Length: 562
Image 1 (cartoon, one colour):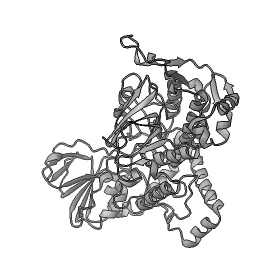
Image 2 (cartoon, rainbow, N blue to C red):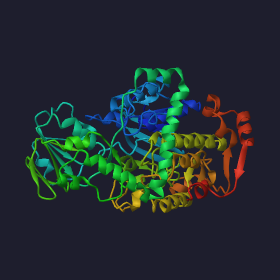
Image 3 (tube, one colour):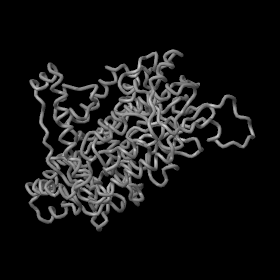
Image 4 (cartoon, rainbow, N blue to C red):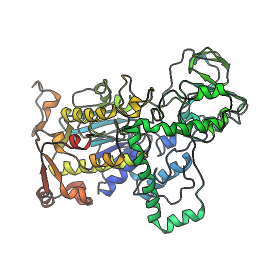
């Protein structure tokens, strides 16, 4: 029997990247220690552990791409590399004492909602457990997507995805095919180009590339940040403010991005002198429609004599020959796929079974949608970090994660206030209202009007990935849970009798809430360890007295409106 068989915890967090570690820290800061972090690998880091390809680095400035509660005065560069970000996450894990909570090598195989006990039953590769609440922090960049290329299985050479880099395979002197020209590819290409004998890049759509203004952060500068912590906060604030000002161009006035396009074109023209190559590298869509890439080394690498750029993408493999959509052929020894991740069809959704016996993937067949990017209808006490429409096109995802952690903290406080065996299930009407507002705002954004097809869009062409506003707007929209948007589920007084014919949803008492109840104290101060793990009667009474009632107008109708 596995070591953790039949264990029950208050909260189970899935994943130990930025989202999962952030959730763990927030739980401890709220006084909650009865939780586990389930990690499928043997170490923390999430996408910054898995992506270790040559040249891997972040395209968000270091001081903004870190937790506000864990500033790092020791960042070595303005844009840090993968190894530095991973080391930072290891440091956060140790400083906040998270390791005792983490179950490594514990991949979640299945999670099923128990409608009678109001809990999640979880099967992992290391055993089973149950939890009152699940926080899914697997992230959208966790499962690589490799295209189904005819003949790929016959290729005699080496094949791997950028997120599963084979460090034992030596690329020196090899003929290499790089499939894709996204964020990973433009970092890989300059790193491997000097090593390989020939590099053939299969480009389906050219990206817009701006210069990457990166520099080393000197010892004196880091010393100032150590001695005067407010300078780190100031630096972070300035980086955040600049990006907040840019949002309008992406979300409301895409035409204003024309100036940025001219900067990108000049960046290319300085290096790419061949007019034919320059034409093939020039996008035919508005900048920002796809992710804007940052690199000062990508174009110089493309201009080297051992590099070929092929249009149309990879369409077929014939033995050692790779064939592009335009018919171009090349003999290669290795194929590297930089083809992204399963973003709009996250695999974890196939493993989560809700109150109606349907998986989250089945519920999302028509497209992902969740209340405030966190709660899907029919999945009580289940919250997704970096869920539908929480992505960003120009700023740091850590800002969005921390906003959702505020929402998580208030969610748990509300459960405490309600008392007993209780769960919250997002109302379908509230999910629809929220999603409708988001999609209406999305219509005029550059991601929908820029004339491209991107990984922001799902199979039906809907943008279920990006947030169409500022990070400050999202912070306001997730500062607290509005109970008017949820059905309150309570465990029945006795066990259900077999053969009653009741549905899964009838197995619990559903409280009809017409007014939202919010614990005032919970929004302005932390919860003590005693309060978080089980308040006494007196403390419970005091908390209830401190509640306020709001009208039926939901936050979604006021804070997501244009």
